[in-house]
Length: 52
Image (tube, rainbow, N blue to C red; front, side, top):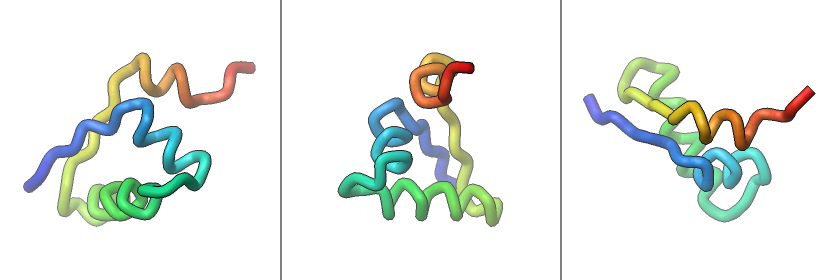
């Protein structure tokens, strides 16, 4: 099983629907079907998630 580490730029690419977003979505879909593992560091999540 492949393991992917999604950095901040990958997550922002997906969020903002930039070129390459389809590849990030594909990797996340593989993870959802238990065909890959995805990780993201805490700081990347803090940079992407909206602050309330």
